[in-house]
Image 1: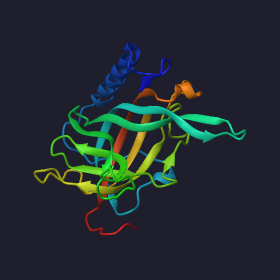
Image 2 (image 1 turned 135 degrees about the horizontal axis):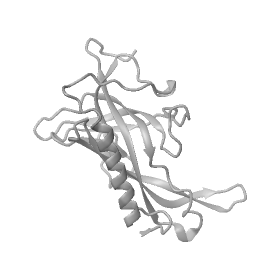
Image 3 (image 1 turned 180 degrees about the vertical axis):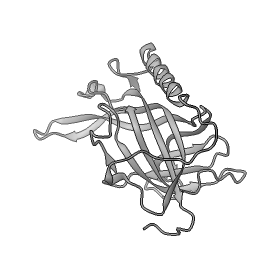
Image 4 (image 1 turned 90 degrees about the horizontal axis):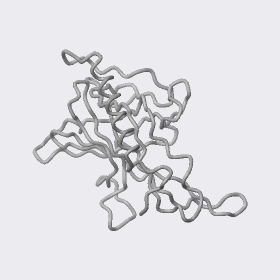
Length: 231
């Protein structure tokens, strides 16, 4: 694989942008620091990504990382000419609490609870979150329609806000269960992360990669006490 000269972020400039994103997170999380545990209160969101009644936010992680893209063939255009597009192959992010303590990591991995069609994979590749302390893990998918780029909420150039449905969960090797009750995850307050607008237009670009810095807030939900079913 080769890195795109125009958009690879394995350069000093890219490292600077990641450092800037991390610095912004530090500033946001330290004004003010939480003196004690408080209820998790998600912000207003577009109607199509609201969480179903009977679920309650119990954890929020402030993510700093990259959305990682590869230039791949993307069919043909109306004239029958080949098309190429930046395709996400994994996010790579660390989630922090308000006190800047690392709480989780985020990436793609096979979900063992969804058998895939690839006999060499352990399951369907899904977005994954792993608790940094007890290694409990959840996998999620975005159901069609559970994404928003509404300009009233989503910043220009930022990746979409999402409602993610959990489709698999595993306890850690010693029984850790911080994330296992999760039913839904929202990706909100995004900045950056969109695929490059150049560098993937011709056959010679195939295989190029771009690592695009982003930040986001991930809100984790579980069943509210006294509710056994979604309403």
